[in-house]
Each structure stands twice: as structure tokens, then as C-alpha cells.
Image (tube, rainbow, N blue to C red):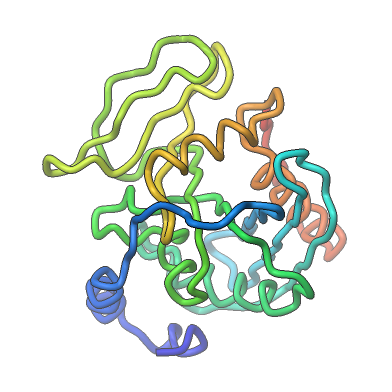
Length: 232
């Protein structure tokens, strides 16, 4: 199935497709060096069909921005928790295809396998592009965990049905944790270590923080409302 076909799916069909994709997930060690890391984010109003998508490229581990791409797209797929990838992936794929250079690893603002069907946007996007991906989310979607200590890089495993699906990571003192989970073609341990290397004094890792800034600028330039959040 092509992402351009997602709008034809009912929610039940989308869930069935997630269950098909789930069989292809590979959570395994990344076996190549990371020279360029990407960050991906989406901005939209859940009541609007307009979607602003962007991907930022940074040198790793320096976190120097070296490129980006962005698109303004439309979707009619409904806003449904657990199925947001069907709204977001087609636009992100457009931005991905505009990149002259593809990153060695992509960090997406959302879940990897920390999802009830293990198919968060990072996993979904990794599967359809066959790219190593990590999900770095600002809020929890699935999984239970013990609150990490209030120290930078304190962490706690996230469990669902007896399986470790992610890590709650305290990226900054006195702030809520972020939720890290592998998407595809990278291990749980590597996912956490990469995100730690991407924390530069803010709660949010630089790839998704810079991608968030990018898509909000695109949204404002297009006449949309500024939805810039306080990313600490």
C-alpha cells in the first residue's frame, strides 16, 4: 500500500494495516556510523486538512544544521489517537523525497514501538522508507513506568504486557520526561544513547526541536497561527 492511499482507509482498515506492518519491524543494533541525523515534525490543527511537515538535517554529534526540507500538504484522514501516522506520514514522505541527502538516522516527534500495536509514527515511517528511526515523544501514549529521578539522564523502562517498549528519560531537571522508543533498525539501548547525545540544554533533543521550529515557521509564513510550544 502506498501512503497516498491512506485517505481511502477506514479506521478499522488502518488498524489492520498496522498489524500487517508490525510483522516487518526490526529492533536490532544499528550497524553503521551516524554522520548525519535527521529530525522530523508535523504541525497541524486537528480540525484542519492542512498539514505542515518538515525534516531538518544535522551533523552528528555536533548538532550543526546542514539542511532541511518542508512541505505544505493536505489530508482528510481523521484525527484518531493511535492512527496519527496515517495523517502525518504522507506529508513527511513528501518532505523526505525532497531531501538531496538522506540522514543515516531519523528522529521523529512521536512514538516508535511505544504504541499499543507497536506502530507509532517513527516505526511506520522507518518501515516504509527502510530507514533507521527513533521515536522521541513529549507525552506518553502507551506503557507504564516508574517516574525517573529528578536528575539529568535518569531513566526508567516503559512496559506494556510484560514487554519493554521504551524509556522514560529525564532530559532536564524539573521537567517532565521524554519518551524514547526505537522505531526501526536500531536497538532500544542505542536509541537512548543517541537521544542523550542530542540533548543540548533543552528538554527536547535537537533534531526534533529544530524540526519543530522549522514547521512552525512554515506554518506562520503560510498565514497559519503560531503554535510554537515552550520547548524549554
